[in-house]
Length: 176
Image 1 (cartoon, one colour):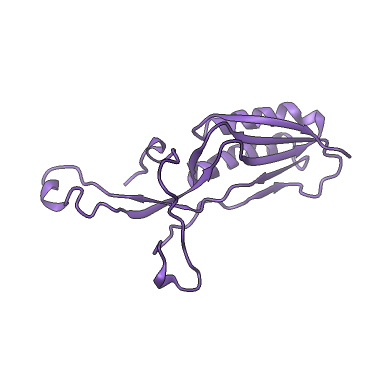
Image 2 (cartoon, one colour):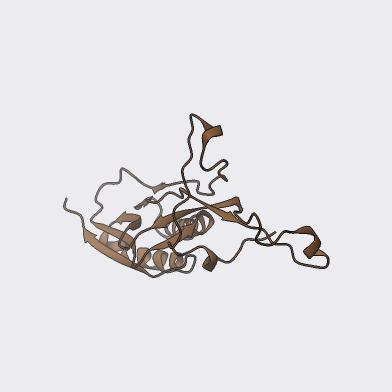
């Protein structure tokens, strides 16, 4: 079964469901957590010298993004930057998908009404994880040199296509 559309879980109207204990898993509020699809949080040249620009990718309003959308956005930006300016940037993803998304699976097709119970016991099972991003919270930061500015803006444009919500790019000069 495929993923539900992102519009079903992108708002922060519901209470976060993320309480998980490593010490006593049997007494958890959240019994099982799906694994996260995010692989890397730090990419590029971390100890690079001479970075004089910093770009912060911030949310214009509260939004919830699934981990597969975050991974897709990260890959799109990193792939472009690695191809155009290899080793001349530092990319840091600053959000982590703590929130567990539940889904009440519904069966469609002939005879489905005999198999399912509708909204009785509709709490749902954990299917995915998401990051809850507040207004003006930084999703990721990119550091680079001034000459690479057009490449960073193109990477951000490619990233915006992968995620829902309204976003802004804050540009700062780094004091040397």
